[in-house]
Every structure is written in structure tokens, then in C-alpha cells.
Image 1 (cartoon, protein in one colour):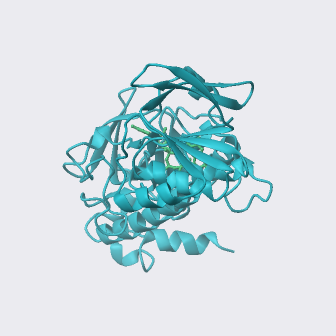
Image 2 (image 1 turned 45 degrees about the horizontal axis):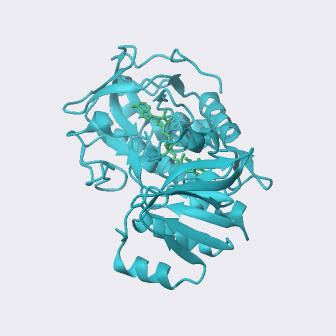
Image 3 (image 1 turned 45 degrees about the vertical axis):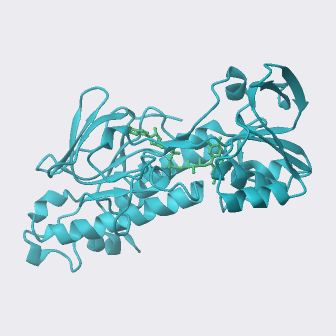
Length: 356
Ligand SMILES: Cc1cc2nc3c(=O)[nH]c(=O)nc-3n(C[C@H](O)[C@H](O)[C@H](O)COP(=O)(O)OP(=O)(O)OC[C@H]3O[C@@H](n4cnc5c(N)ncnc54)[C@H](O)[C@@H]3O)c2cc1C
């Protein structure tokens, strides 16, 4: 993936961006495409891990439009190229500080650059919690997965292990049981944390069995996963179990540290949209895995990015009644006053003129 270290355009006359998008993956890049095509000249601070979680995977078979599937990094490169082509600018750094206490909002990047924005779309995603084994990294996308919905299909009629004991581990196990030959849930304790109803479903499923008081000591294979080594936490004994896949389901962590205390979150730190995609702070919108712990898919993250950008545009149009029109920083003249602006605000006008 190529990176721009310099923004490709400049902020409006007041030195304030219309929209700054934090995160350069499915949600952020889709938001960028919509915001750019609405003539908002978005700046994407795409983060050190530009492209996001799909950069860690191989074949993506469930993103519509690719009958043969597409490699995760190729999909992200295409999304970024599309955003760039329609006018989004990029900074390939992490945002390290955000001040949403007053407007314009302020964001500071790793290199110390300060960016000011009328509206912000937070699309910083989430990370799956991992076991911390070097072998797990080596086999990620080659038998190790963090997403049954994404990768279960590759394990039809095979034997898989699910690691974890909460609701999401059992959700993964039940999903996989429809595809795999057998599903073994490995849990470090002697009872599950999952809800009673999920436990009942899993306990009564003929394809699901459990290994208790055990943790994964290592993942073995040759190019792809062939076995897990399990350590019994009571006896210390290590045994090897043949498997075709290992699904790690011990939770996710949203990338929201820098917004702590400023934007409402749930107990796990996921940002909470309060109405539509707007967060508890007016003018700050959320999109993708940073707020969504239910679906966690590329297509849903992209859809949330679209929604956030459309809502940001509408909100900015409302705000334009209060701010001078020149602050929009449009590519085309939009008239000297609000009265002279195209009906519905500059965003709408730009969209009309862009069509043949
Ligand atoms: C191994 C794997 C395989 C998967 N396979 C599939 C699949 O086959 N199909 C599918 O639909 N989904 C799949 N998923 C899920 C999918 O990748 C996610 O749902 C999707 O990437 C979420 O997109 P997002 O834009 O919300 O966030 P993410 O992909 O998490 O990206 C977050 C972005 O925010 C940036 N960022 C983070 N912190 C900061 C910061 N402080 N400042 C600036 N930027 C920041 C990162 O650099 C990154 O660009 C898979 C996930 C994994 C881990």
C-alpha cells in the first residue's frame, strides 16, 4: 500500500477542515469517498496501521462485487485509491491526542501536527485480543482466525478449535458447528462466562465438545495449522490435539484510548452513537468496529462509514447557517453569502454539478 505523508490539499481559509476522518480502513475510507464526493475535502488521518484489520488477512470472500474473492490488502488498496481519486487527503500517522471540548475540534498527530476540524468521523476500529503466541501471528490467515463469520466457510467439514468461554466464543462455536465436522471449545476455567441460553445451545449441540481448564500453549503446523498444544492448568500436562483451524474468541478492544472521557462509551470502551451516527459530542461521528461489536464485518464498517459521512454533511449544512460560507473550502465558488449558496448547501450543489 502506498502512503502519502503529506496532505494533498490544504484546509479552508480559516485553517479549519470541514471533516477529519480518523482511521483509514473500511469505515474511514468509505466515509472519505462520500465526504470527498460531497465536496467536503476530507482529510483522513489513516493511522500507522493504514488499511486496518483486513491487511492481516488473505482471501476475503464475502465482500460483494468480487465473485472470486479478493485479498484483504488488495481490497484496502483499492478503497484507498478510490478515496484519493475523488479528492481525499491523507496523513499516514496515528492521531495521538483529540480535543473535542470545543469547536473547532483539535487533533494532534504522532509528528506533532495539529489539525482543526468542524466535524470529525472516528473510524479507528478495534483489535481482536490475541493469546500472545508467536505461532498465532505466524498462522493468522493460515488456519488461525478471529472471525468465524469471515473464515468459517474455509473450514467446511474440517475440525476446528475455538478458544474462549464468553458469549462470543459460543457464538463462534455455534456458527462454526453449521460448517465444520467438529468444534472443540478450549476454555481456561472449569465453567463458562457465557449466558445460560448460549451455554444450553452449545452443550446440546452434537458437534460441539469442551476441553476445560486448558490453555493453548502453542499452535503447530507446516504452512497451515495442523495441531494445537494444550496445557492443562491443573496438572501442567501438555497434550497435542490435531485440528485444521483455531478461532481465537477472547474478545476485542476498540481503539478509543485517545477519546477517553470525552465521548460516551460502553463498559468495554466502544464509542456509543447517541442519535444516528453522531456520538455524545455534537459534530463527532462514529463509524465501524470502533462502535459496532455486533457485526464486525468489512461491509458493515463500510456502510457505517457511508452513514457517518452523509450525516456529517447534513450536520455541516445545518451549521453553515451559523458559519460564513467561505469556511466550506469548496473547489467551486459557492456564492458570497448563505443566500447565494445553492439550495441545500454547498455539498448538495457540488454533487449536482459533478453529474453529467
Ligand atoms: C484476520 C481478520 C480477517 C477478517 N476477515 C474478514 C472477512 O473476510 N470479511 C469481512 O467482512 N470482515 C473481515 N474481518 C473484519 C474486518 O476486517 C473489520 O470488520 C473491518 O476491518 C472494520 O473496519 P474499520 O474501518 O471499522 O476498522 P479497522 O479495520 O479496525 O481499521 C481501523 C483503522 O483506524 C486506524 N487507527 C487506529 N487508531 C488510530 C489513531 N489513534 N489515529 C488514527 N488512525 C487510527 C488504523 O490505522 C486503521 O486504519 C476480518 C478481520 C480480521 C482481523
